[in-house]
Image (cartoon, rainbow, N blue to C red; front, side, top):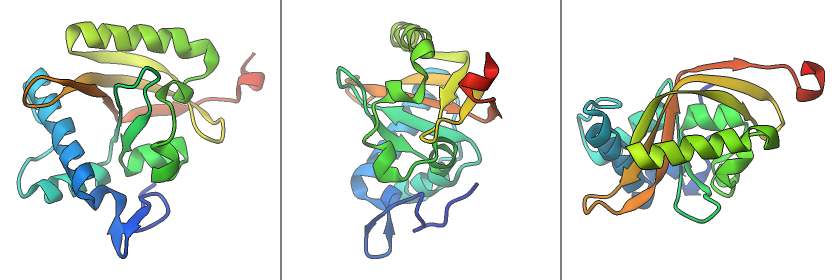
Length: 176
């Protein structure tokens, strides 16, 4: 599901300005792309054009991109249109959500192990796991890449994930 540039999934930041167009969020998109390229040795998407052009392409990409910060209970700080649609949230809702809440309680230990493995190795490119949307829709993600975010000085800025494969699952009470 794609969001219109100023539709409910992208949240407006000002008159006619989508959330991803704010300068701090354009800079965050650059951080996502730079960190991915530095760690994986390839680009997540075309780096042609201005930072704003790249931020727009990242937001509109046909795959999920999501990230969280460095808080003790990390909060999501970016989600592209695919992420917003999959998690069934607006930008404002997503960016107030602790990232642990994207997994069901039963899967949170697995998620914590993934994030620790990513922290130690820089990235993982083989993650699969169950996540849950704001409306409790469960889905399994496959072949996700999770990577550390670091600025040009090497300061840790959080973690991000991207994937293009997910499968809806039955409700937890129907799965048992």
